[in-house]
Image (cartoon, rainbow, N blue to C red; front, side, top):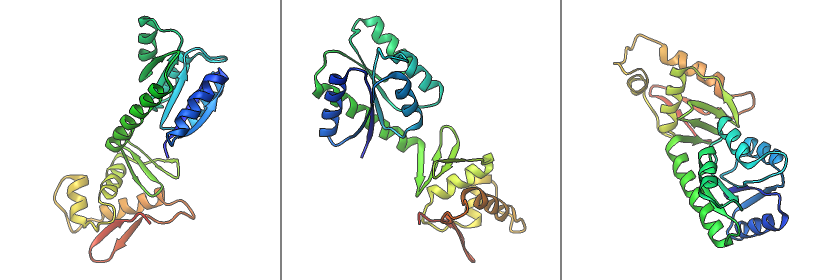
Length: 225
């Protein structure tokens, strides 16, 4: 179920947004000031955000600017009573993805959120790979397992990406060599075994289910569990 964060200090408006989005099958959290909203948006795993332009404790423009500076790319629908063109431009340039003026139709608000959710889903499919609780951010070149960032060297990241893309399939040492190192396989080297060993130590925390399995006489397979 997609998760949406509504940051709105007006109780009536917030309840209207929450009710409409919930009716459409979305899970909605509500923050009634900018400071709490920023913390939840930064630390929470949300698929979209509705953001009031004028908020107590932290202004909406400042909030979305700080989110983008922190690397949070969750799509944001800015909602404001300020309807002139300059204000809409400021909101979009600060990092907003769409801008809706008050008063608004709940149906239009929900439709705009749904568009942002579809766009976000397409972007994630293009830039994120996931297997079980392992996640690879192909843009930031960051790997996480169970939400914890893994310190991988560039070659280790390429090796893990190759295994994730072939999830459930046995890959030979020759296939790994050509995909990761880009040159022909030397049967006398143990570079693959060394890198697989290092990778296992980094992605398999104590108590976690091992993801990479050795297939004797064939190669390796990354399994979803």
